[in-house]
Length: 135
Length: 135
DNA sequence: CCATTTAAGACCGTTTTTGTCCTTTTTACT
DNA sequence: AGTAAAAAGGACAAAAACGGTCTTAAATGG
Ligand code: SF4
Ligand code: SF4
Image 1: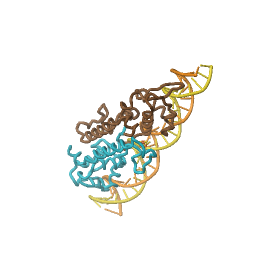
Image 2: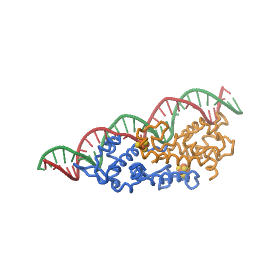
Image 3: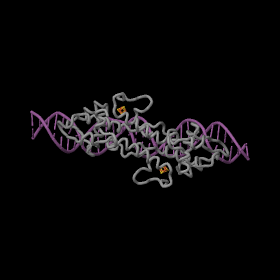
């Protein structure tokens, strides 16, 4: 239950690898893939979505590659996870458009809201800098 | 991300309905299904797995049905969720058989362990009695 | 025996996951 | 200008998970 997908796991491995590099250094996706044990084409897709959100910068052509879009200390684990997995939603009724008619009288709903808040808080409290240098 | 399946949601709705009944009263799965808006045959399956674990007792034949296997105060939300969704595993490396070779040196692993612990603690702290009478 | 109700398992369409492959675009270097 | 090196983008697809249904069997009370 509540399992991160491989995409999420790969995303973290990949961007943490970037965070470990010297700031400003451009890295090939092929290098990241090999170092982290992630299928290269899959990782490329993941990095593309990172790039759209500004989490990484990319350069095409010879000498191209990826690097972090901002300092590692300014990227949280939550941002990484939500970039590829979407918002943290332990149950359907926690989406922005309240989807369950029982929501008003439901006693379970607040429990899921707490779960959501706790997970978000933990993930918000961890940055790529923490992960890159071993907390 | 981290979304409860419909099976899990249905399971909670169903067993909370049982918890709201007078202790000892036997309820038909058809009644629970109608009251909670869950497909009956699907709910029947869910209740079967509850029965195997002792969360509910069942009686077959005329006058049969379901009731809680022990007092509502002795059944936690975690037990209900894990009965149908399996253990709370935010990431693969948190299964009993450590499946990731990086686990020893990984800085992300402890974060997921924290998440696991927090979710478990929240769900452990809520009983069917709480849910039945509105906390 | 018969109606009722759960138990158990086979089955099945849809969606999501987990990728691959191919073409295009951008860029640097010669 | 030509070419090689990357990432960008999109189509495709096998496998797994999800969300159920259906059928048959077993128990139970009348
Ligand atoms: S019944 Fe309660 S917990 Fe379930 S989806 Fe509706 S509001 Fe959420
Ligand atoms: S790399 Fe770390 S977080 Fe990812 S599966 Fe392995 S131990 Fe867990």
